[in-house]
Amino acid sequence: MNRTFSLKYGEKEIEIPIMGARSIEVLQGNPMKEIEDVPAAFYKAVEQEPIDSPPLSQLIQPNDLVTLVVSDITRAWTHQDQVIGPLVSFLHETCQVPYEHMVILIALGTHRPNTEEEMKQIVSPAVYEKVQVLNHNCDAPDLVYVGTTSRGTRVEVNPLVVGRKVILVGGTVHHLMAGFGGGRKSILPGVCSRRSIRENHERALSPTEKKTDDKVGSGKLSLNPIHEDMDEAAALVAPVFGINLVMASSGKHSGLFCGNWRTAWEASCRYQKQCYEVPVDHLADVVIVSCGGYPKDINLYQAIKCPLNAINAMKPGGTLLFLAECRDGGGAKDYFDWVRPLKEGRLDEALRADFTIGGYIFYATCEWLRRGKIFLMSQLPPELVKEMNITSAPQIETLLKQIDFTGKDVYVVPYGGYILPVPPVSK
Image (cartoon, rainbow, N blue to C red; front, top):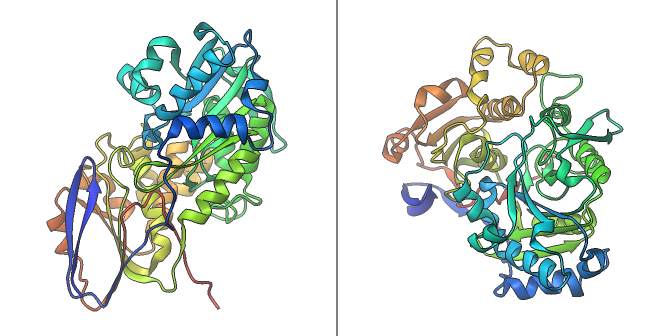
């Protein structure tokens, strides 16, 4: 069987010929509706059909100080500007909130600050001219302590989410640590201190073995210690409303789940799960996955979520090829600092002694990618990822010479950031 696929890479498309395979299947989500009129759908969701909540107009008064917590540029694929514009207009025109009483806070977690141009892209140029937009700083000296979770995480947050009406805006997608992104994650890690983020994220590691906790992973919420800790942290802030976006693989909005910050988000997770968890009846010899292009492949820290999803469809010892431009390199500034303890055979020990978020993503990458032969088309220097069991090159031809498709079962995943293959249950 021979086929050629065109997969997204940065802002380009790469042709990948597959020759002589026994079978070739494309893994993609279930058919999804697409919202054609986002402002109309927004109004319906916040006023006529809010989930477990009064309409937004009943929650916001003209004299309220309002903080909109939104996602950073690495989540630009949610096109949240198409919702933030109607939201700001609604608050100003329907709720009579002056623009100067609003602030838009970018939930960076430990990510780099967004530039002015990126801020305009996130909220739209029109909104940027009317409402103050600020980057969260996890190391700022004025963060406010609001309580401690039952697991002992000290929750320190941006002062702009204290004593104000807080509205969360974010996209819901599978997440390799928290089960699903969005919702409560806009608070922790989004607008928390580095210490709070570290204390939460270090729960990813098993308390008894040198590995990731089995309760942590994509699509896992029940008993997931990271998710449950995040949920408690968000409850301490008590957002007044949540706006949760689910995207179709086409890039258009498919679902707007608005209302109670917790239960509206949970509804978005159920929809995401229904659309993007794809059962497979067999494991493949070769899996080819693209992140879906820029900005989902902006750096390895973001892009690695795609192969970590797709590898669920690969046989042990199989081959995985993924496309991720990584124009911003590793992403987290300490991401590649962990190569040295990896080479020295003490990665687990080193991470437990000095846990960082970038370190854990590196740890999870190495843990999962030991399952087979891993090839990466990227701008990253090959020597940076060699110790991680990744063979990298900037040209697809170089990598394809090392992959034999003859007689093999192949899966192709064009949008790996969305799709979570669900393998057959072992008997």
